[in-house]
Image 1 (cartoon, rainbow, N blue to C red):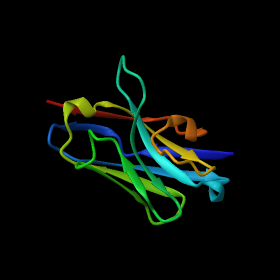
Image 2 (cartoon, one colour):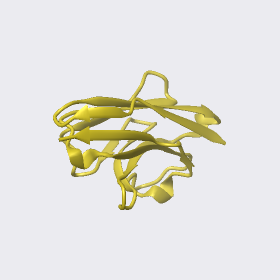
Image 3 (cartoon, one colour):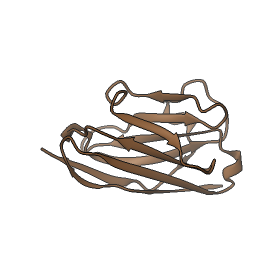
Amino acid sequence: QVELVESGGGLVQAGGSLRLSCAASGRSSRITHMGWFRQAPGKEREFVAAIRRNGGGTSYADSVKVRFTIARDGAENAMLLQMNSLEPEDTAVYYCAAGDRTVYYLSRSSGYPYWGQGTQVTVSS
């Protein structure tokens, strides 16, 4: 089992920045990829960004591609999401997720059996 804990959410004005972190524990050595998803009120959960453990390959949703950066946070079982130029449309609960089997499409939530509890990001206009 893998446990994930997110941190770094909060309230920020439009145009501002936030950094989210995710720390994995438990059988974290089995992780092959980690990602971020988000869910806004009344909307379905959507993919934001992901990174592979081997090679560090990344994938981004088109809506965040030039504004957000995903990276490993030093230790292999931790990652961060640097969010710049935030917009009110980025307001959502952000979830850290991890998978333990290699997948082709990092954007599919079905490839992530492990999920954190989520952290709220609110961007005011």
